[in-house]
Structure formats: C-alpha cells, structure tokens
Length: 58
Image (cartoon, rainbow, N blue to C red; front, side, top):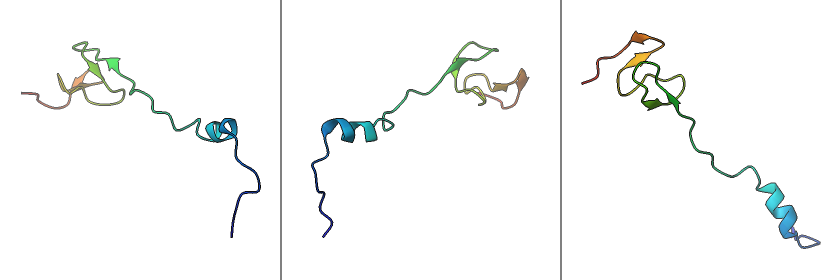
C-alpha cells in the first residue's frame, strides 16, 4: 500500500495550495457611459464596444 513515510508539514502542504485562492474580476469603466464593465466585453448598460453601438439596450 502507498503510505507516506513522513508526515507532510503544514508549511509544505500550504505551499502546494498557494495558487488555489480566488481573485476578484477586473472591471473597467465604459468610455461611453462610465458604468463598470468587464474588459473586452460589450457594455451591458449602453451596448457599446470600442466606441460603436453594437446592440440595442432596452
């Protein structure tokens, strides 16, 4: 059976999990309406992307 020869220390275990943390999504202001939006996405508030109207927002 596969049994560890030595106990894995808390420090070594936590170093392995250092990349598991979550990060908040990046938001940028829309140049048209200044509402927050995700970068490289159409603005959900005004429907603009790169200074041109893409979709009609109700």
